[in-house]
Image (tube, rainbow, N blue to C red; front, side, top):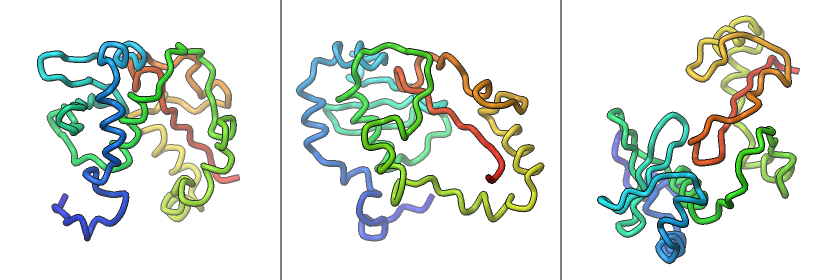
Length: 179
């Protein structure tokens, strides 16, 4: 990826634009308590939380105010990823895993949040697969996170999330043909 200047990236795209109050809030918290609540590891050697999320492990150093991808194929991190991981560490509650999938509409304000600027960007998929539902299904089954076979809801949703996906949150990707 080309290195873009802050002006070229725009607002809410540069991780350096994260509100410093988030870092301040995280730094005020007890590291061991945060690690326990978030079900993540805290490495005292490099003062870094190790956060498993979306098949990667991210290192978050609150003191030096940075987050990095620890994988060999590390990618540049987005403002949104910083925002998600910081808020997760600060605000997660130790509720445990219920095994029940929760949709965006069930969350307080979720019916509003997942519309407008937060709506899933499906136009490229619709354009590519609109007239070819078999190709859409085939592409979904070949994806890295596929369960390997088509099935009807609710069986297509794992009943118990894998431990360690951002502690207690496991995103689930479901595909279905256009209604």
